[in-house]
Length: 108
Image (cartoon, rainbow, N blue to C red; front, side, top):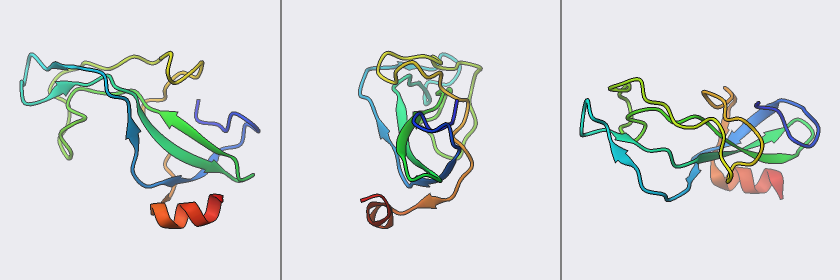
């Protein structure tokens, strides 16, 4: 699920930050200050062979409230037409994050 789609190698680093799609979402019924946001959240990774690829992880209740756990057991979809045929992992791989400016120097 978290391998490079070109060579199957594991990711060795990630670009800091992420991108997201912009589809609407609903409020949590248990805690209306949190949302059930099923927008895809993409992060860029690089494998040891230098290939750059994007992964989206499964969303959970309250992902929009940093530093707090979920208010209920809602989870988003594992599959998505935008993300392609790859099933979303529960979490992103645990690899070092590289600031955007340094990332650009490494992958260009």
